[in-house]
Image 1 (tube, rainbow, N blue to C red):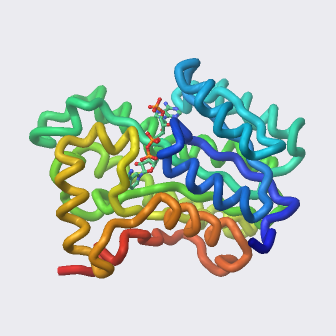
Image 2: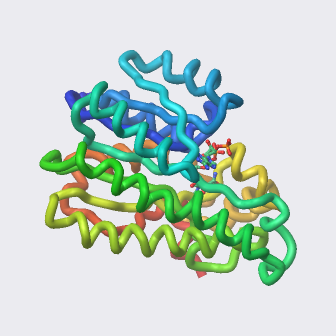
Length: 256
Ligand code: NAP
């Protein structure tokens, strides 16, 4: 593959294992020549993320729970020393309590609602703010991952749908803020893909089968397809695109 991202650097939030969409995105970025840093949540995931990152020479691996502002800031302080600058941020994290991803949405607790928004939506703004000093003058790209549950009622998605709506609105406000600095902000709205987080949504397997029959392409999307869309949004071919939500869902969103 042509190394269109040679000399560029990026940070990837949200690798839990090799099925993570963040990992598929990282592979596409690294194949194009980007040097990457990865964050992991807690000691439980450290080994898995380090083992994956070993496949990508020059990678940096750092702890980060996005609910801890000092950890977010520490990540970018380390990157300043390791990379000196930053071109791409991939935000691929989300969390809601399992019990709030089933049953009626109106049962959502205030604590569960706030937690889902803190991890899944607010963290994009916090990470962006911390990344900015390293991204100045680099024509960088910030990318997050969303889901059609932001626009439509998807059974079981509940509070996460509300958080994704806030995430997509954040993309637009951040894009407007950062446009004058030539930093772009976009979201990929991915179709359903079997990952650790997805397994927490009740009825996910049935949904995969149902969606495959109803997409324009009559199949589900793959993590690699999401990764390649991430490569597009990180690279120069998308230089005119910001504030957008790009659907990588085999055309599910256009079907009536
Ligand atoms: P995943 O592999 O489970 O990745 C989610 C990551 O978020 C995990 O590494 C998780 O760590 C991390 N995370 C949770 N709370 C965090 C916190 N407080 N601080 C830092 N990291 C935290 O699942 P995925 O499906 O690839 O999800 C990646 C993104 O894609 C999410 O935003 C998800 O909503 C989005 N997405 C997924 C699908 C799909 O069908 N899979 C479709 C559309 C969009 P833990 O595992 O330790 O919680």
